[in-house]
Each structure stands twice: as C-alpha cells, then as structure tokens.
Length: 181
Image 1 (tube, rainbow, N blue to C red):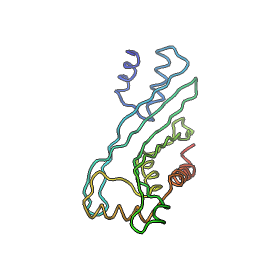
Image 2 (cartoon, helix red, strand yellow):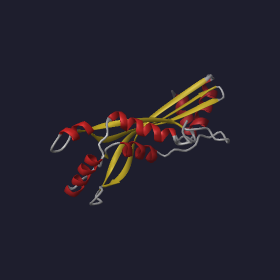
Image 3 (tube, rainbow, N blue to C red):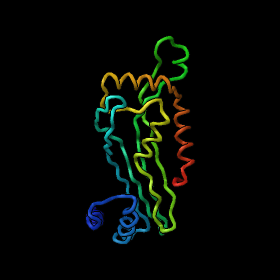
C-alpha cells in the first residue's frame, strides 16, 4: 500500500479523469504489474436554490471515478447517484386528490469517448445530475420554504413518470450524447 501512497503523493493527491491514466501507468510500473485499477468514491456537494424563494442549501451526491489500465488500454468511468422524486401516473389517474409519489435514486455510470490526444472526453458531474433530475417528476432540494414546497409538489403532479420511463428517458439522453460511449 505504501507504493500506492507514493504514487498518489507524486501527483499531489489530485485524482481526476485527467490524472488517472498517469497514476495508473506509474502504479503498474512501480508494482511491476500488467494492470491496475483505481476506484475512488466521494461525496460531491452542489449548491441548490429553492425554485421559488431562492433559499440555498447544499445537496450531496454520491460519485465515483473508476480508472483501469490493462497494457496500453486505459478506461475511465464516472458514476453519479442522484436522488429524485417520481409521481405515479396510474395513482394520479385514479385519485381525486393527490397521487402516490416516492423518492428514489438514479444511478448513472458513463464511459466517455477517447479523444485523438488520448484523453477521455469531459462530462461534468452537474450534467449527469441534470439528466437524472430532468427525467424524473421532480428534483430534490436541500431546503424548501412553503412556497417552494407548493411548487415542487405541483411540478411533480404535472410531470408524472413511471420508473421505467424515467430510466428510459435518462438512457436516451445519455445515448444521444456523442461524448459518451
């Protein structure tokens, strides 16, 4: 493990999609290994504004970087878990008042394409969050005042979505992004 720490220290502890190939290369050389894999999991905090009052708070998202080097082939996967809200279209249709809704998590792992310079194309964590939230009935917010709560409730009611459709909508958006393979 100390060789791994030495490699990370050589890169000043900076682990990004741009530094992972160099870290993996150096790690395979130091350990005299044919392949190496690094998985880093971390919370990502993003300031969110409530939709009506503008009250701010920090939302946290579970993220991961997975890098792998096998010979001369390197790979990078960005993972993001996004909490969302979904409102059931069937429940809305059969109810006179309200509808069944629930919180869930959309887990997205993306592999970005390789550019001619050998680097992987850049995909922002915030872009992945937006895809998941826009596919759901409503995003979640860390802080809601009464006017915000009303807005979020009505937005979800106006955008009912089955879980299967939520997943399909996110998958289509990801598939259509030329940066993602």
